[in-house]
Image 1 (tube, one colour):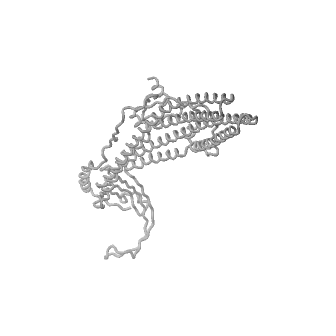
Image 2 (image 1 turned 60 degrees about the horizontal axis):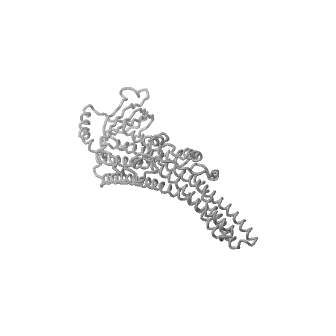
Image 3 (image 1 turned 60 degrees about the vertical axis):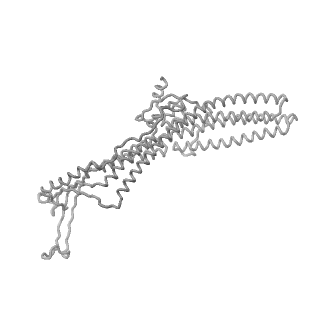
Length: 488
């Protein structure tokens, strides 16, 4: 190991070089980061039947699906959280981002290396002469080395600090992305689950309709055998029954698709997953909805976009640092001897202290372009952040308005079912008494079936809209927060 020796008179020279550099240190840094301003409405357009929630961005989002009080849904959600592969990908990305912070932060500290070596070597007598007055000789000798090196980049212009700041913001963004992936997964699972249960209820309604239509067909057939009913009445009833069975097959196919989707989300092969039908009525619950400003705290996608803005801001500082010199402090030391017994003797000691200053004088505009790229990336991040807030406002308003309208539609649909049942009863009585044609019975049957299916579909839409409203608000509040808001 060879190293230059620096005399004591070299230290003042190095210090003289460092003073003007230190004075420039404050010239290059990232702009002071400020969270982009967003104009937020004071309240939502729709209020009833919602209660105000109590959000807190530092509290992990709870198991919001418990609000629906469905044990089967609870089990599927837990299974998805532990077995879903997309969520595992998000976990891995989060681990990578956190490790990258450690990688970047290592630049704040000196890098220490150790070197050891042993060799026996022969030099050539025919090698080029170092001096024409002295002939070369061939020598055979040992070379034993042990040494260390310390290198440190003096971060005078913030390159390393801003790199660390960018990595930390990216790590926080990855954490928000993980939370968003989890929220999207759990909400999509709940949506598919309620779609499947709505189809269970609709299939049940259609099965009941098919049963009644088959009984009516047998009744008409018997009357036709007696010459009381016409062939037209029989054909009309058969056509209605065939149409209902066709719709039933289509609904069963849609149910199978939702079942397969639930299997994939829970990390289960579709062939091994089976969810038994359930005709239990899906119950709505009062949802806690915060103020518009709360969405900024609760939505993980908004948090991720805001952290992207912070990372882009730090990257501007990294790019600007290229305008200024890079100062490396270097220390080397160790021992070098031709005999291992003399390795640690005083004459074998060697060391060096020094600095390396590098400055780009001409790069054909590369640094300027890099800074402009960073500034443009920052502007794009701010726009993405603001757009995500606008989309969140839209989704919450859509959810609240949709639930209010669906609540009214559900009441009207239930009233329509009761009215059409009375019409069917009247039509059957009039046909049996010979006062009316069977066409009116057919019409009444179809109207009742359509109204029953519509009522079930609206109930399913109410559950879906509830899920998407919770998703739009960034997840649910825990039970203690719900109880506090309900007591107000």
